[in-house]
Length: 629
Ligand SMILES: Cc1ncc(C[n+]2csc(CCOP(=O)(O)OP(=O)(O)O)c2C)c(N)n1
Ligand SMILES: *[C@@H]1O[C@H](CO)[C@@H](O)[C@H](O)[C@H]1NC(C)=O
Ligand SMILES: *[C@@H]1O[C@H](CO)[C@@H](O)[C@H](O)[C@H]1NC(C)=O
Ligand SMILES: *[C@@H]1O[C@H](CO)[C@@H](O)[C@H](O)[C@H]1NC(C)=O
Ligand SMILES: CC(=O)N[C@H]1CO[C@H](CO)[C@@H](O)[C@@H]1O
Ligand SMILES: [Mg+2]
Image (tube, rainbow, N blue to C red; front, side, top):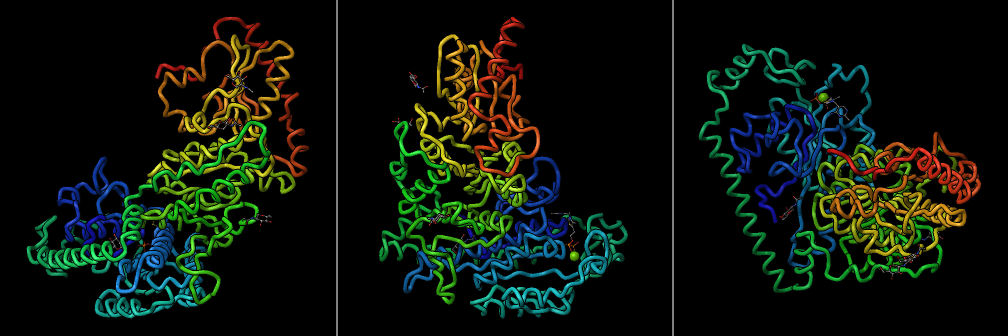
């Protein structure tokens, strides 16, 4: 377990001064941040980037920067604590007791994601969450009068929070302290402490937006230092007594940690099984042999939608992976994300479940779900997954990209993944979503073609510690394709249907792979020998040895890509592309596929044209993945 000096989780809001304050506190408290690190604030390759990054700097628990994410991550951290405590604390063993503290500003409260998550935090009665709101009436554009005049106290009371107001946060530090102590006593509600402050307190520019981002003038800095009793000549100087004061806090933290370690050791004696589980989960190791439970299918066996294959996987592995904590943004029935024996994660007083429950009812809050899952993952011991329609993963984009940047192990079970969802029409049919997700570094976008590929996607995604995955799953039924093994699919791409001396290759994903196979069969009858490549995950395929990649994408014949999305990006793996030129359409799904020409016969016709074009043109057809750099 990481050294935990204060036994606090502090989630900062992403404002420059607060980022600097956070780094300074970490330095004073003895985290691995030197004075030189502080001096290289915001410089390339420093440990003190412009906004704190959790995978980068010691003591940073979540990456914030986009406003509203930090407070939302805090809700996830607090929920994780409630869950882990309910799962592992025993009589006499109050092992998991963390409070989560978050600082937030006007900007965070204006962002919609904070409303989603703070509303849920109130419902969940997360008494261990304490948020301090820096109520300074200023954002970048100036006075909050121009856009933010709501009554935050009433709003949070309506969410079910315990709210306190500190009138003079500039001078009355004791009142802040007292409010925190009060908040700690409230066990059945999250707490908001609204602290009235003056931005840039002490500066000639205090109380104005100009102190938000631009450095203070030299003479102003001199005045401030004098005002607070510092020597204006000294820079980057910490008086010894300040180090001593903070050191004492560090020592207190180290003592608390030693005590905690002793408690954990006693727990190991009294509850050996639970201890083994808890420490395994915190290390982030999966239980041994879990993957043996993954379903495999015979060719032609039970056609099903890949969302259904996904449900079968979850049902098969859930009992064996207790850290898998699921949920859905109000699409449980459609998403098939809730296993039969699941208990809801709910405050016991609601009688709807318990904190030990492993199924979150996120409500219709996709962005909030994403940000909360990041917090659940950051806490440790939990692998969260959340269900929604693939199209609505876009609603959560702000949280999804932070998952990838912060290396959170989070899974999205994204169903209704194309025009194949049918009647709901273009508002619900993802077109651009896949390429957006594929463009995010350190994110795996999986689009399995059948049962085996769905098992492969879960196998890879659950083992990919430090990488979030989006599993794109169909609403419509898909056959189990001959030659689609788990071993093949975990490579991200493979030859599903091989021929010698091919005239054409079709590369496809998910529900369109069967259409590619049907086209290949029709083409064979016309003498156009066609290979079919299934490419369920670009990023995983791109990480394979070049030699393997070139076996799959060998030179010789043209490559045609087929996917019921925009063709943008497919140029990387193909010479010609077939997909959707614009939005989808509402109608029965097979009719919608027909409308856009994504059928065996039409793709065969398109494929024939492609093969003939390249034959006629002559010359060598080089693999689309062969490049100089
Ligand atoms: C999602 C998002 N939008 C915009 C910004 C740019 N931005 C950074 S700070 C800020 C204003 C923050 O105001 P407030 O939270 O009140 O902080 P204060 O200036 O009072 O410290 C804005 C708009 C951002 N970081 N994230
Ligand atoms: C919660 O508390 C435990 C025990 O004190 C500590 O090991 C852990 O790091 C804390 N978690 C967070 C997220 O602060
Ligand atoms: C699924 O994979 C297993 C082994 O991984 C294989 O035996 C089986 O034939 C595959 N099923 C299909 C439909 O290809
Ligand atoms: C499956 O693979 C085998 C061996 O490569 C091959 O003979 C067979 O034609 C393949 N099946 C299909 C449907 O491509
Ligand atoms: C496990 C689960 O929640 N299954 C549900 C899936 O959705 C169908 C209808 O949409 C329900 O009948 C199932 O109970
Ligand atoms: Mg402000």
